[in-house]
Length: 399
Ligand code: PMP
Image 1 (cartoon, helix red, strand yellow):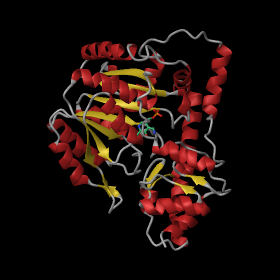
Image 2 (tube, rainbow, N blue to C red; image 1 turned 30 degrees about the vertical axis):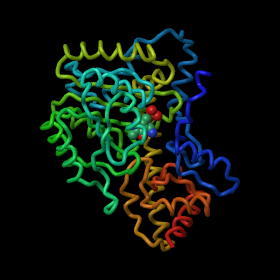
Image 3 (tube, helix red, strand yellow; image 1 turned 60 degrees about the horizontal axis):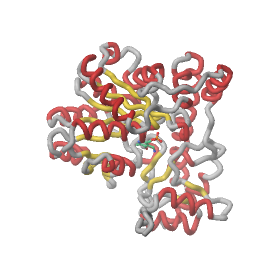
Image 4 (cartoon, helix red, strand yellow; image 1 turned 90 degrees about the horizontal axis):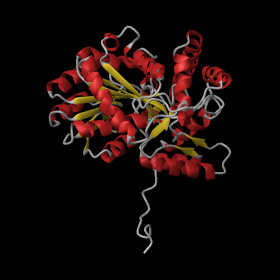
């Protein structure tokens, strides 16, 4: 019998399936709000000018393409640490942060998961309910049982504060807690400074291991503001992990630019942790690719390009906010049978719209507006040409 004869078909990725259906749709005014990328006003994935400038310089330098160190480009890793913890961070000067370049945020989570499995083989992982669908799959693949802690309250379109704290308290001690630093995917609903402090207290008390996922730094309130969770954990004195992604903030999705940072208690601990992290990477993909991280490092380490990037990131952030605001206003003006002001309070690309499965289905079938069945829409896929059709469609499915 053939080796593959009995292999079963894996379940389809629901989001990719949605995109296939969208591509096959022949309606002119179709809109895909199921995506997980930022589109500009023209409906395209932008190529940032800061990136183009850095690429020109890189091409002109005609640099050889040798192997990178296992932990990646040093100047990149250092720049990631400053973005997360601030350029004046004591953690950095004390040698308490270990950073390795990774294959996007996903790669950082996976390498972190594999390292944690060696350190805490019997631990449980907890993710928010709901969460980015790959969180569960990644940590299950790393060999952990994955549970959920309460997070979103559909009634208030806000955080289930008491539920979240209660669940975190009830997990077995030394559980690994995955936390979205900002721009929560899929809800768009974020924790405030007070929430973070309370969470930190519980995590400390239970000796849980925080794993902060920051995939949208700069898409919420600003580069520094969005690092709040990382900064508060830094102040807490705890040991923790952070996965960074530059897929969205640099619009470099396909270049796979991310990083894993580990905060330790001492320089000596850092050296030992780095040696183990390098083993995990070495036996996985040996060392990371050169292009994306070189570009991000050149931008972050040049005053001029950094200024340009911050301006472009600001434009993306402002455009998403404007689209959220426009959506709220249009829905109110068009007499939607529901108050949507909560959409303008959410942060980042995603929005839990509050629409149910049937309404999402009607959006697609009757209006060619594609959203995820949970009601998640990508606010960054709205633009001034498609928003009128989207709000018309939402009003109609609520009738
Ligand atoms: N974490 C979260 C919460 C995300 O939404 C995403 C991307 N959608 C990632 C991590 C992974 O990002 P990357 O594409 O850089 O792997």
